[in-house]
Image 1: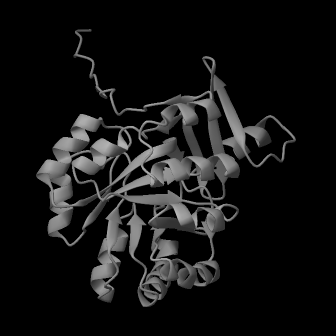
Image 2: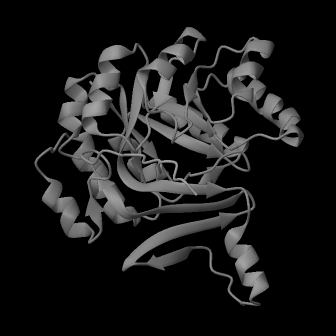
Length: 288
């Protein structure tokens, strides 16, 4: 059966453990696109609680790593390996090399979000000992089905939440405020464009812009189970705790026909790219 994987916050984690099979915790200063971050001490405290309830714990170390990060990264990987974490979400392939050099046993999850779109590359990484892929949110349900048929990778598919659209290591909001001398200490920001509202996060690690709509694939969960998807993720980013707990129950209890309950909670629900093919168009060379 497909496992329910939740990206929690510190505020909702104790409430959602009864409605998931696994969680993903972002390590403070070492991850992007996560609803919250946790210190190693906090992760160590949560581990026995989760293991007692047979809940898998994955860790996100999915930021671009730089030379100055490598010593801390190796130290972090050694600690997580000793803690017997169930897997590490990675973006930077330095983690693959570190695992090899350090003879680590911890499983890795290929999580280059906008690149995990085809089974050929997944099969390459599988041959290198990577057994999980966090599938891009920019491909269709039909394409996910094709991938599941052609790879031995365990697929992790985003099925609920705001989707990261754009990541920059530059502090774009901070720079904007400083340039125009804007006094604003808000933790969260909104980009208003063409009648839509796009959530923006600006941290020490840079800027992330999210989709204006919340992906809701409750009814698609049944299909994903049929094709053998290993995990689906529910992202609690900017979702009020009480609403997130309620919708987590719907997914966990397989209430496939209850999408209207979620639609009544939010005014900005859609299907993302599950039925919308992404087409890249290149302009033809024109004579000058």
